[in-house]
Structure formats: structure tokens, C-alpha cells
Image (cartoon, rainbow, N blue to C red; front, side):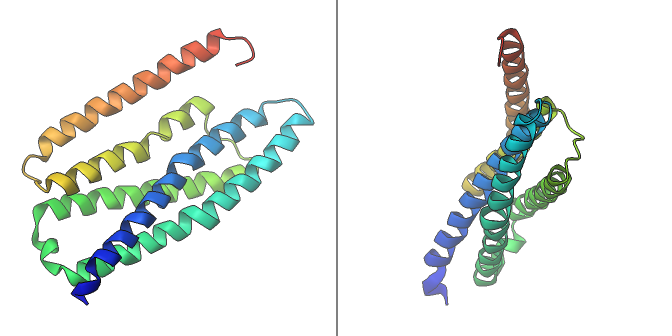
Length: 183
């Protein structure tokens, strides 16, 4: 079975990438849905229905299947390499994966609300929420490449710095957008 390790790893990475593609794009669709809800009729209804359809296809054709397949291939890799479960970097990584699933499930909750026109987030809040998957991705990639949970404190400091920069970028973008007419 170990001779298939690289194929399984490649498939795991492919589905991680497509999963994150879905997680990066679904909150953008949420932003557009929230903003469309504020438009006058019939634009509100036309845009709303199109965005709901786009979100449904992205969520159930790409994002959910990718999450499931990435997880199945990850478990398969752990079966092939059980020693990884004894390493501290893997414990930290699995913590981030739990956060990722929490993020995914919260996106699913938001998706279900928006499908029935329940708006509980502002478009700016959703823009900030959109950065959650970016922070998790950076954390996991650095952890897997460096494989050193002892020095993960430097990583945490870097992630906090990245988070601050992302939030400042969102606020700057909002100021620029608010100054432009028809933005």
C-alpha cells in the first residue's frame, strides 16, 4: 500500500486546493447576495436568484465533495503513516483542521440562511469572515512545511500579523469603496 503513498498524497492535496477554492469563493458570493438584497426590485430578485444558484452549485458540487474527499485521503495517509500522530506538529495541524471544519460548518449555516433570504451579516462583516480560511490555510501550510510545533509561536505571531494586515486592508478597501459613487 505504501507504493501508492504519493498518489494518495497528490489526491489529498488536489482536494484540499479545491476545498479551499470553494471556501474562498463562497463568502464572496455571500457578500454579493447581501448587497443584492439591498437593491431595488426587480434587480434584487434577479440577482438574488442567480447568486443563490451559483452558491448552491459551488457549495454542493465543489466545496462539500472536496472537503469529504480531502478528509478521506488524509485519513488514508494517516493509516499509511501512523507515526505522524505521535508528532507534535501533527497535533497542532489537527487543531487547525478542527477550526477549518468549524469554519466550513458556519459557512454552511450562513449559506442556508441566505438561501431563504435571512440576512444576519453586513457585507463588510462577511468580507472579514472571508479571511478566516486564508488564516487557517497559512497556518496549516507553514506548519506542514516547517513541521516544528515547538517554534509555532513564531507562526502564531506571523498569523496575528497577517490577520491584522488583512483586516486593515478590508477597512481601507471599505473607505475607498464608500468614497466612490456607484461602488
